Length: 216
Ligand code: AP5
Ligand code: MG
Image (tube, rainbow, N blue to C red; front, side):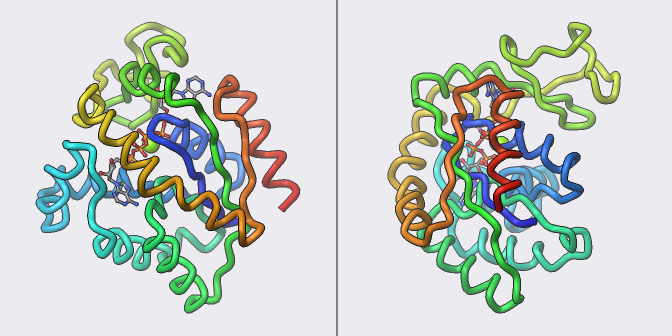
């Protein structure tokens, strides 16, 4: 199974992708995670992306298209993948079509996670992750079962993303509306766009995603 989770910053792409990976035995390809790993490792791509990401702008199409093109043919993608955060511009969407056709791969769905902007800021500023295993949490909406201890690995150190501040979030939302939202009519016209209510609670969004995926 191969599909795109399309949604604004804080829409719940990463949260749901983590759940769908386990349920469907597929991999999550988060371009944000890949870029953060490149920044942390100090690679050439990381050096080029760091300031752009911290400001909340989009990294160049060339870098992203190259990264995904290399990644989708790796062995762990054989059973399928979730594209989380890619494509994010029309140029990326068009490049994805070409790249998948060349590799004889097909997308099963493009799923919009629809959330009002007013909700997104609170979701992003309340978000934190386990510094050890990366499990995601939220101050209000998704707390660990025991305060201060990761449910997944039992560690007690957590971190916040450097782009999860009010200024960068405003820029990220503007980038979404200007550069990513045009992908909605692009995929709608192709008949591949499905929509789930990203404002529902986390379990309900998972249910809606599984319903959409079961229909193919
Ligand atoms: P990226 O890492 O992709 O960030 P993003 O798109 O801004 O999205 P987020 O990760 O912030 O949100 P999410 O939808 O995953 O939400 P989450 O599940 O965590 O990209 C970062 C940067 O990298 C970009 O700004 C750009 O610079 C660069 N980049 C990446 N890809 C690129 C590309 N293709 N082209 C160019 N540049 C690129 O949820 C958020 C919080 O809400 C969590 O705390 C969660 O617990 C909570 N929550 C989730 N769902 C619910 C719910 N249903 N109800 C209540 N709370 C919920
Ligand atoms: Mg994410």
